[in-house]
Length: 383
Image (cartoon, rainbow, N blue to C red):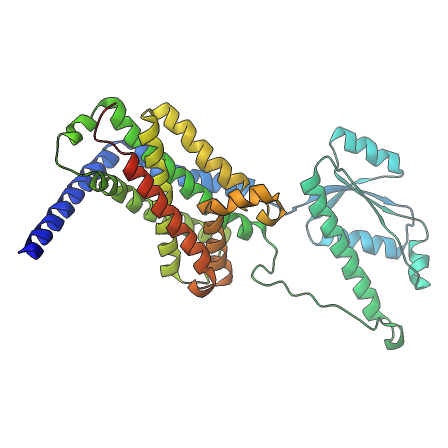
């Protein structure tokens, strides 16, 4: 008898949750602003950030001072532009001219090939090349310096290979780049973008829609029904969880199509991890709406608590290990930190659950806390 009563209660609870989810789905479909926010904004953000945030160099203008004017110096200058990273736009005569162009913002990199460059090479002495960088733009110039160093090393290895065996170096290093052989920044940026987009959309969707119900007074009708708090929370989150899963499919497919981001791991693990991450962020948005009960305040709090932490502290653009210890501790609490590791592991490295389980467990813990706190803070009263 008790089992029948318990089964009947569970069935009634499920029906109430389904009814609430159906009601919330109708609200989503009837509000074009929510539809645009759910499906238009992810595409816009992916295109904007995907093409705007890039650490690749493409035909960066450089100034060249070739004081040697020999075949060797011209060969070195040609090797700088052969990769497509640089283009020599200014043939200069003096270092002071480069500094003047730096001040005007016309150039960021200058290369000086001193007199005697070829003579040093023929004598098997060290041939020096001076690289001048505009340190005001640290990101671009550090990448440019890496390219110049790479070209110089390649030229050195080419010269060594052309010598007779007794003049070759005894030790040579061979470099093999795994998971991203072309060193394309899009393969590094896009997985972080997926986490950023899902975090913002999930928090804003629930924060705005539920806060709007508080403002319109429609919560009064909900309070007049026998629906329990946990049923309200689950019923409201399920439609947005379905929207989030569609967003995952959408941005992952666009990332593969537009930026050639591979999918080397398990699709099932990717979606399971995404559901955990979305559940936590949706719970965070619901908690914001419960605490603020105002769309304007919910928008501001939602952006501050989703965009800024994901952008600055999650390892999206800079490694967490390089941050101060206090910020590292905060970063390890953020679900986006763990989700970015999971995305890069699944998409780029083909990692499985045996490698990613600590991060998956962190997502599950955050989701449980957010749903629990949101349910506890949801009161069946208006004040």
